[in-house]
Length: 159
Image (cartoon, rainbow, N blue to C red; front, side, top):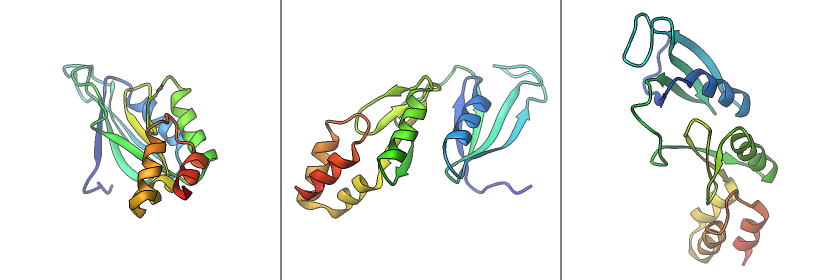
């Protein structure tokens, strides 16, 4: 069994397996690769409860830890998913928001477990990398959006 040198550990109350399975169904190159049960009782669970879940999200190795209610998520940590077009942007955004999540601004949303996601069309990132007036126009357009509107970003890039 190969263990990744670096893994993102995401804290959940008790829903790591449910969240990991949702991510695996939603994003390409994602999977649940292991479910591990507690060998004994622990502060927020009992022997046999799911303790950790190994999974990948868009190729990134993660470990879901069912650590209990001690810590809550915030936007200081987020997954950023690059999308190629409006259809892909809509698909991921809607999957998260329509599954008990919350819409936010500037391409951000939060899943029902409290994890933040940035659903970011590549056209927006490319505009930011271009700099100058193109970046400014795209940025100003983005600041008025919840889910990113690809056509509006493309129009802003053109001026």
